Length: 509
Ligand code: SF4
Figure 1: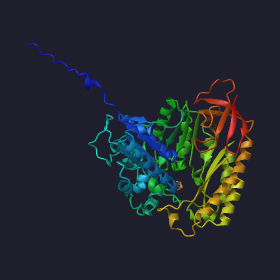
Figure 2: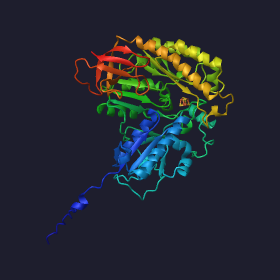
Figure 3: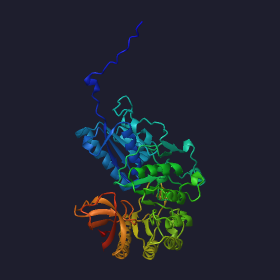
Figure 4: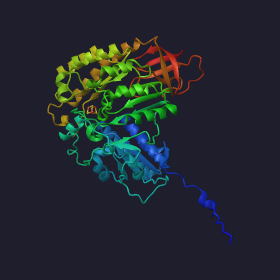
């Protein structure tokens, strides 16, 4: 008996037409650590079939990844949420998702007080962005999925639950209530423990040839002004090989400059039983052939070891650049900040850094107006800045944050006085910076070309080893030498021809 061959029912033309992918617009606020979270969420959305658009008015879904580190950041986050909510009225947007630090702090308030918000995603729930956006894995809008759904972490993430240990210091701080959110009404008790890994999809939002890698998340330090540990959870490192695999993949795709970030990069590996984990990691990353520059940000002062300095000094690819936020120099303020140390210790440590790493670029930041900071404390800080001669320096005004230890301190400094101190310290640094930048005129260095300047197309912007992305002064190129045009993401040998207070001008040689 002949076997009847079943015929394939060909679909009609109508059913062949693919439905349009859901368009997602993304707004990322805050620091580079938040930017990496945004890049991960965009990657997850794209891998779910969504199309990422940079035009909010075109988006079906808008995600705002927020910051709530200090008051001004919170205000910016709320303003942006309200602005984006308008697209649900005037534009195409059907869904608004709020993600990030603001969610960790005000989860319930956001849901209650901003009805335009359809879903929230905390810093520990990045995997749940697809469900929150209501996108099914085929990239279509899935109305059956309810908002505020939290998915469990998948294999594209690593978490404390999946075998990562915490540091003894973190455990002790947890026992003493460092991570407690009980002072915050709308926050849930669970601390975030998410970490992405090398398999997590990610879309880079940084200029060509440049990328951040988050090597750790959370923080165990007790700094009295800071609520990041409550927002981001206990310190946890990504697996060593996961960071290397990600860096290799990025290098293979054209990235030449990698900036390692975390709340405290110098603690890297302590929870993995690695001694000098950051030094080991840098040393290994520097062996990736296609990478040209590797740098790290956010060092904790007493964690900068001799081995770390020797690793920086001994390897051309590791930028001779250290960013170490010192926060203050007066012993009494540092003690009240729960950080300890004093100006002399810092000066000795700076001396060691400079004598071990030739041509070191040193960046720091300070907080002025911490509760109880006297005029004498502030003068001490000013003297310290004059002596230390930092290449780059940021000054932040103290912000009184509910949930921080400092919130309960008396002797608050008046806002006008805080502002006066901030301006004065910046004025001192302005002169120091001008002097140090003038010394660079005539020097030759490698510059990573970024693209035409936002100010004028006649100038290009670039970056040298002494400029970390986004935070330091600018380097403009006004003479392309023998090149008709520069290529973004390429390195050029340049000579510094002019110096301003913070910015440099260079010509290609
Ligand atoms: S080390 Fe940085 S992130 Fe950690 S508590 Fe101190 S200021 Fe906050």
